[in-house]
Image 1 (cartoon, helix red, strand yellow):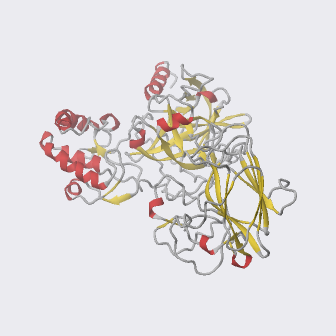
Image 2 (cartoon, rainbow, N blue to C red):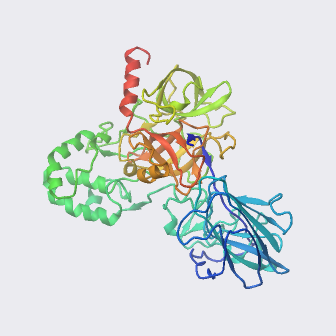
Image 3 (cartoon, rainbow, N blue to C red):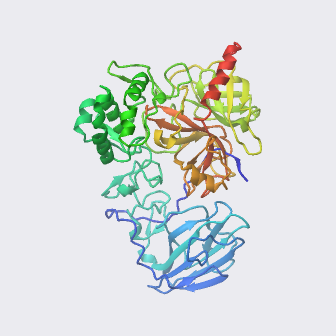
Length: 602
C-alpha cells in the first residue's frame, strides 16, 4: 500500500575493523571472486550446523536458485556456525538485499537460546565486501521473512580467523588486515578507510574510493561527497569554442552530449552550417560545453530572444544535417541581465517576480553531510498546526508556496527561515495561510494530481535566508537538471522520529519506465517523477510530504522539480520516492496566482 512520504536517510553500513599505525595503499574491489569454493553450498532448508576448521570455507545463501529469483515468503531458517578454539567466525557479504524492515537476518553468539536477545539484525541492502566477525567461536544466524514482498536475498562466504589476527577499529569493532583501505567501509566509525594512502579519489571525510566510483549514483563516501558535484567539472580542450566563450570549464554528460569527445565531434558537424547566423557557433559552443555551476549561483546563457532568432534562421539547416530535431528549448532561457554580447544570466522558471529565484546568497558549497546548514535551503517552509510540524512546502513567490494536496487542511501556518524545529533564527518568519488551493483533479485515493498552492496571509521578507525557488519548466528533467536533493524535517527512519534539524540527501532522478514498473505501472508520466536509488537506502518518509525535490539547473540556480508525494514504505529497495512533477503544472500554478491577483488578494 502506497503511503504519503516524508524524509529518511538510511545508511546501512555493516561494520567491524582497524588497527593503528601506517595503512597500506588502497586495494581494488573484486578480489573476493576466486577465494571460495561455491560447490559447497548450505541452503536455507531448516536448521544447519556448520563446523569449520582453519582453512575451511563455506557458502550459505537465503535460498537455492540458478537465476535472480527472489527468496520465498514465510521462511524461518537457522544456521549455527562453529570455529575451532581461539578462532572466530568471519562472514563476507557477496550480495544482500532484503525487503526493508520486514524480512530480517538476526545474529548472536553461542549455540543456545537461539533467537533470544539477538546481538544485531540486518535488513535492506548491504554492500558487497562488507565483513562481520563473531565475538566468540560460535555464532548463530536466523533468517525470517514475512508473507509478502520478496527480494534478491543474500549470499555469504564463511571462514574462520585466529583471534590474534583480528585488529580493531577505533570503536573496538573487529576486522582483519585485508579490510583496511580497501574502499569498503566496515567500521561504523569509518576508521578502516581513513588515513589511507589514496591512489585515486579522496572523499571529504578522507575515505579512499576508486575513481570509477565517483558520480556513479552510489553514495560510496557515506557523506555524499563522491556524488555531490556531478557531473564532474573539467577543463574542456576545444580551441575554437574556448576562443568564443569566457569560461574554460564544462561538465559531461550535459543536456547535449555525454562526453567531451562527443562534444568535439558534434561541433565538427554543426560548423558546416555556421553561416546560418553570425552567433550560431557561439551558441553551439555554449550548449556543447556549458559552463560549470560549481562555486556560483548564476550562469549566463544565450539570451532567449537571440535563441529564438538563431532557431528561426538555423533550424532547417540543422535538421537537414540529419542530427534529429532541434535540440534547444529556447523557452527555458531568459532575456534578463544581458551582457551586451548575446548572453543573459536571468533564471529559468522565475515565478517570484524578483529575478532572484533559486539563489542561495549565504551558501558556499559544502560537500557531503546530512544535516543542512543555515541558509543552504532558503526556500523550504515548515507547515504547522498547533501540534507542530505537519508537512513541507517550497516558497516560489513572496506570497505563495507549493506543497502536496494530500497535506491540505492539516495545518494553518507556515514558518520560513528556520533550520531547526525547536528554535527560531533571526530570520525566522511565520504567517498564517490565507488560502489553500488543491488541484481540481486531485484524487485522494490514488494521490494523482497531488499539487497544492498556498497563499500566505503576509508576504515573506526576501533576504539572505528566505528566498523563492525557481520552478522546473523543462520536460527533459534528466538532461536539464543535476545535483538533486530531497530536503526536510521528516522521519529519520520508517516508523522513526521527526528530525529536529533540516536534513538533506543527494538523490538521482530515476528513469520513469523503471520506476513505473516498480509501482505496478500505476504511475502517470505527466504528473509523476521518481527520485532516489533503486537499491533503496535513501528516500522521503512521512513528515515531509509536500517538501521539495530540488535540483540545480543549467542556469546555476535551484529548481523545484518535484513535491514529495508518496512511496512504498521508506527507503525500500525497488521503491524510490514518487514526486508530483512540477514541469507539467507551471501553467496551473501561474493561473492560480493570477486569479487571486485579479481578485485583489495578492
